Structures are given as C-alpha cells and as structure tokens.
Amino acid sequence: MIDFLIIGGGIAGLSAGARLSHHGKVIVLEAEDVLGYHASGRSAALFEENYGPDSVVALNKASADFLASENGGYLTPRGLMLIGGKNQHDVFARDVVDLNMQELPVAEARDRVPILNPDSVGFTAISDGAFDIDTDRLLQDFARVIRSNGGKVLTRNKVTAIRKDRHWIVSSGQTYESRNIVNAAGPWIDEIAIMAGIAPIGISPRRRSMARLPAPAGHDLRDWPMLLGAQEAWYAKPDAGKLIVSPSEADPVPPHDAYADDMVLAEGLARYEAMVTEPVTRVEANWAGLRSFAPDGTLVLGPDPVDPTFIWSAGQGGYGFQTAPAASKLVADLATGHTPELDDASVRALKPERLCQ
Image (cartoon, rainbow, N blue to C red; front, side):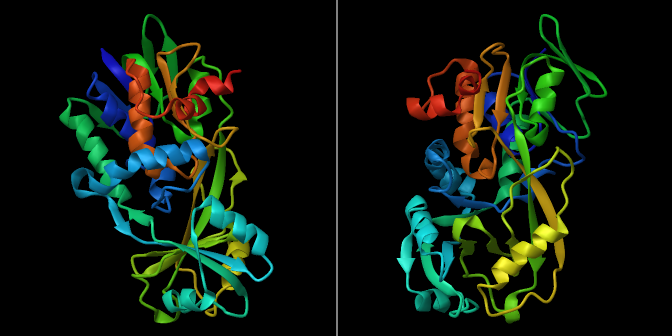
C-alpha cells in the first residue's frame, strides 16, 4: 500500500514527494521520459522574493533560506534590472514599488549593460536580490530524498484511469493502490481531478515563448543582470554565454507539449530590440512552456475540502521553483495534520477551499 501517490514529476510533485516521504511511502508517476520535462524544464530559473502576489511573496520569503543554504545552496547572484521606455513613467514607477527596486540613472544602467539604448530607455531600476536557481540540481535532489526514504520516482507512467474503492486505484500501465493522491500534474491538473471524480478548480495553462540569441555584439554576459521590461512586456536573461529573450506572454492554451508562437515571439523580440542598440540578427533556438494559473493567480496547496485524501499542488504559474521549498512544506503539513509554519493569512490564501466558496 502506498501512502502518497504523486502524479507529476516536475518541481511541484518532486518537492511535495520529498517532504511527504518523511511521513510515509511515496511513489511519483511522471508521464514523460524525463523529470521536469514541461514547465519545470523551461523555466527562467530566477529567484526574486518580491515577485508575485502577496501569498507567493510569503512563500518566496519562506523558501529563501532553503534555496540559499540547503545542500550547499542553489542560488548564484544575478540581479534584476527594470527597463522603462521614455513614455512609461507611470507603469515603471508602479513596478519599482511592487518589486521593491531601487531606481538607477540610465547612464549607470548602461555601465552595467552597455547595449541599452539611451534614445529609447527612459527609466531603469535595479535589484541585487535576484538570483539564478540551479533548477536541475534542485529537481534531482528532491528526487534523491524520495528514493533515500524508500520511495520511487517513475517516468514513462502516464495515468490513464483513477477510481476510488476504499483507497485510490490508479492505472498507468500497471495499477497502484494508495491512501492519498497528490495532484501535481501542471497543465493537466484539472484533467486528473476529473478523472478522479473531484471537482476541477479552473486551472488555466498559459504559453510563454522564448528564444536563445547569441551574445549581443560578442559581449561577456556573465555579470549582466536579468532585464525586465516595464509591465513585464519582455525579459532577457543571460544563460551560458547566450541571451534568452521572451515576450512574457501568458496566452491561454489547452494542455500540450508547448512550442513557441512565431508571431508572438517576433513581437516580443521587437519590444526587446527597441530598448537596445544591437539588432537581433539570429535566433539560435526557440521553445515554449506552459505556466498553470488558478483563477486568482496564486498557488493551490493542500487537501481537497470534499475529499481530503485528494491533495492539490497546483497553480504554480511562474513561481514554481522559487516557492517550492515552502510550498511543499505547506502541502506536507496540511496533508499530515501538522501546524503550518506559514502565517494564517497566507495559508488561507493558498488552500483550495477558497476556490470552492
């Protein structure tokens, strides 16, 4: 008998599985050939604790120590620079407040990122509290905890049927019997719920496209911050000597193996290009990921109010990695009857009950 059968081998499922493996037998089922194939494998991989709505920020702050120090730490300094066009003063100012950033003279910003175009960039701000996350190592370390506690992490196990007798019976090529299910299936969250006879919560998968560009004008990008357009209209992030640029779109799409929309990507590259002096002459690769949002834009964590043996780890949106340590701890606390360490208001804002009222 399994205690916690987890559906989904991305950051949501593996982190929850690692926490729950201290409380019982865990098996993680992942449909794809590898772990973290979908959203988790296509993340911007940035930790910025002020990014997101209030309940997400609470999770970010509660995750900071783990990400900074556990297993030697998963963070390396990156920094985040906000870029506003000359006609974007008001939206830029709101972003500065929301992200708790410090305004920076454009000339100083150009010292850090010399390709910024002084003819189009009107306002800049900086946060030195943004970090790259070693996402692959974080995924593998969570999987290692599950295995070390006697659990299993199984790929190529697509769930095809779920029913409940005294316990949950889940089919995925073979049959598993479990006391609890943890639904961490990303864009397929509601499909899994419906399969299990549980009311869906209205998860919306949304596409985000990305392109990899050569280093502009051959610059060394190692010390550049991530660049974020005002109103999150685009972003550009150094990555292994290249530059990843995204239009930051959030277009609703059905759950699928996502691919970039060429027109949307071109529009985003144009918004980036308008703020820099170096034209985009070549795209080396492009791809897309699906970020999954609940109707109110924040995570859904904990037992279902109708059937508490069905546990949600859903709605990670663009916050999955940076919230994972605290979000998984909350899932485990609520699933096992322990008092959460997170404050009461944040817990209420994250529990699935809020979507059933």
